[in-house]
Length: 443
Image (cartoon, rainbow, N blue to C red; front, side):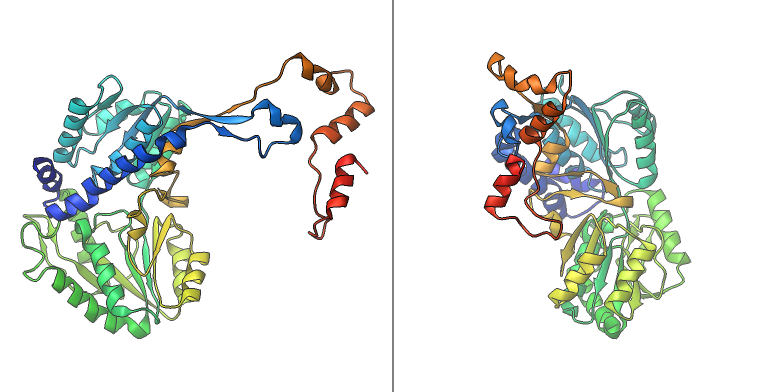
C-alpha cells in the first residue's frame, strides 16, 4: 500500500488510477511472460519451409539475448512504461540498465528499491538523475536502447545511439484523434472520450488529443461531455485525490499558455490553479489543434463527413500513436482504419487496445518505431540467430555441384536441386499437380 501511495504521489492522482494504470498492468505482464517465455525462447525449426535439399540440415532459429540494454522511461506513467519493456528484456536473458524519469521522483525511488531488494544488482541496475546522467549513459555502447518520450529527445537518443551503431526502439507521442461520425452513439462516445481524456490528468501518450466531430452532432456531444465529466466528479475535479495534477510548473505554464492563446471557444471547463498545478477538464470548439497537448484540454473540430475527417488527419497529423473511431457502421469503421495509419486503434472506445495483455504496442512514422509488450517485448530484446547444420562426408558428392570449375551441366543440376518452381502461370492460375511435377523435373 505504501508503494501504491508513492506511485500516486507524483501526480496527486487517485490510488485507483495508480493501481489500474501502473501496478495491475505490470502484474499481468509478468504473469503472461512467465506463462509463455519458455515457448518464446524455444528454438524454431524452419525445416518445414526450407527447400527439400536442406530439410535434413536442421535449419532453425535460436533465440539469444542481445546483451546489456538501456531502457529510458517517461514521466507520465513512470512505473508501467519502464517496467513492461524491462519484463521482456529480462525474459529474453539480457542485463538491463533502467533510467527512470527525474520528474517522477517518488516512482523512481520505488523502482530503485524493487531492483535493489529483489533482483541481482550485477545484472539489473537503476540510474537516477537529471539530464547529465542520461547524457552520460548515452555516451556508452549498448546492445539496444529503448526510449519512451517526446520526439525532440528521441532524436537526441537516436543520434547518440548511431555513434555506436546501437539499434533503438522509440515510443513517441503524436496527436491521437477521436473521430466521431454522425452514426455514433453520442452519449457513449462522449463518456468514453471524457474518460480517456481525464485519466491521469490527460497526461497519456495515447489520450484522445483532439476530436473530429460531424457538425450535425456537435451540440449533442458537448452536452453529453459535460454530463459525463460532472458525473465523474460530482464534487468537482479540483477536489484533492480525484483528478491528477500536472507534473511540473513548466508543463503547467505551457498548458496554461495554450489555453489562454487559443482562438477557440471554451464550452466547458477552463479552470486553473497554479498553486496546485490544477487544470480542469476543458472542451474547446472552433480551434486548430497544433502541437500535442498532453493535458486536460480537448480541442474539437467540426467536419462535414467521415472522409473530411480522414483528410484532416492525413493532412495535419499523419501517423498518430493511437486512433479512435466512434461509429455504429462497421463499413464506416473499416474505411477509417483503411485510410488512417496509426500505431494502434480502438473502435467505439479509447485506449482499450492497451488493456489486452500480449497485444503489441508501438508507433509508426512520427509516433515512433519498434513495438513491445507480450511476445513483442521478448522479440524486441532477442537476437534471432540462424543455425544450419551441415552433414558429413556422405553428402559431399551431392555438394560437388557448388565447387569450381563451373559448367553448364552443374548449373542445370543446381537449378533442379534448389530452385523453387512457380506453381502458377503469369495470370495467377495454379498449375495442375501433373504440370507442377513436370516443372520440378525440368520439363
